[in-house]
Length: 121
Length: 108
Image (tube, rainbow over the protein chains, first blue to last red):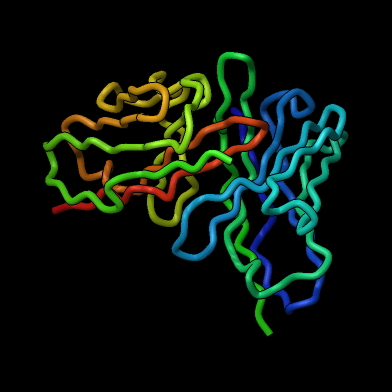
């Protein structure tokens, strides 16, 4: 069974750093792109970026380029999303997703349970 | 960047009725790269439709997708209580993914 299990909720202060994780299981982690999606409170879904764990090829949405860093460690089947200096506006639920991509399809077939990040002084 | 606009913002219907949700793109989208997701309160989104009209694993045939170019539709026949949720369309193009703002399907 394919699963994406994310790290637990975080409460941080503005200016602090943070790294959240997403562990994949039940499939070949290195062979599928992993993405991150933000959902601010009461709002819609925003794609942040994706990484291919096999070679760490990473792509960012222009809206998030320079604001976050996406990485992965294929040896432990885990992807990461990190911030160097959090802002209150980073308060949101963050989902990791498994991306299916070919010349025929592109979609997110599995979603993690979400990690709630709260940034408040 | 392709912008997806979903309508209506909120759709109020009764169980047993048929729901028609619209997703309009600011420029042409490949049908291969158009997907629909369902999100219930407190849950992660779930893939319903990919390739504009193909149902994901385990999705009942009351969910159907159609459309091409800039206009896409998600249809839910015979609404049941568990279908009331928020629905998002998504596209992939020019190495970017974008989502629509969502349609909330609520019980009338």
